[in-house]
Length: 130
Image (cartoon, rainbow, N blue to C red):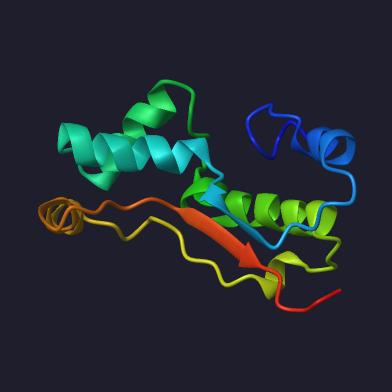
């Protein structure tokens, strides 16, 4: 439970505070490492590689950051949220996944000029009535 939202007891909260509620949609940034990398690229003007190196130096990113930057960690968290909070039975392979590995400084600057930003946002929506 604590691995899904950086220590927020979301499953216990849902069970105790929201009994009988039906969650229809989940959306959010579920991976702090990718959020830090994107923020450094945006605010410090660093390349992806530079921002990743800082995250690794500071102990935020692992030596092999693939699970984070390729969206695998976020996918597992999203699956857990859907299965526990929405009562679904999905697997990680059921999720369309795209990481941040190919985000460039040019893409970041173009997004800033348009008033938007890059983040690894996860979302899922209940499509049935069950």
